[in-house]
Amino acid sequence: MHKSGIIDYDRFMIKFLPKYRGIVAKTKTYVKNAFLAADLDGNGLCDVEEFRLICKHIESGTFTEEETLHIFMNEADLIDEGEKCMSFDKFALVCADYNIFTEEKQNIYLNVKNNEDLEK
Image (cartoon, rainbow, N blue to C red; front, side, top):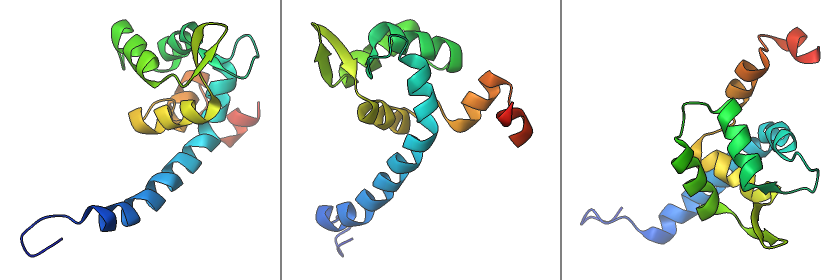
């Protein structure tokens, strides 16, 4: 920060970007299962209906139906057969940005209380 109270953008980004990348990398490890669960047709992409469905089950009460659709439409990064979709990388970014499909939320949904439950 300068003496005048202005934040230097370059310095801020140098400090912020590695932390954000770390958050995204950690997010990728635990949202992989959510992505696989969402990808009902197995095409390696998450379409709007798959995203809506996984939000409804794991993130029920977090967003309204309209908010869920708005997030998806604004964040989808690919077009497959004329339909907006999310790649896994984009899905992980969305999860990090919106703090959704956390390991805790997935465990609650799956009724996992400890490692023994997880192995079952």
